[in-house]
Length: 114
Image (cartoon, rainbow, N blue to C red):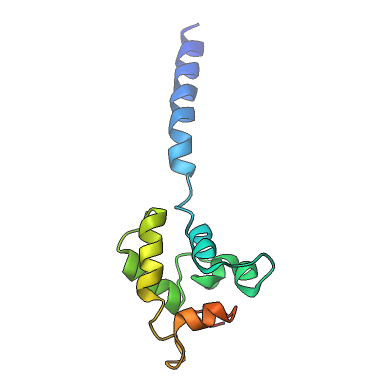
């Protein structure tokens, strides 16, 4: 009986801790889509995480993602902080050094290249 009680207690603690461990980062993608009016099926929508990241490893950011990460200044920003960071970098030049990020976004092109 004691083993059953201990097992139930351990499972209960794990159940309480699991949502915090498995929780994803704040919805940067949703904030980006809202700020820039990304339409379903557009190139930016299809790119999904590829707007800021490149390759399979989501730790690798493209130039736009790197600039956004610097502007955020932390890993877990709320939507208001994310919006402020998006606005802060939108007039920066893209990797081509000719076009602003915001102009590429409005043209439904990936701001980080690709």
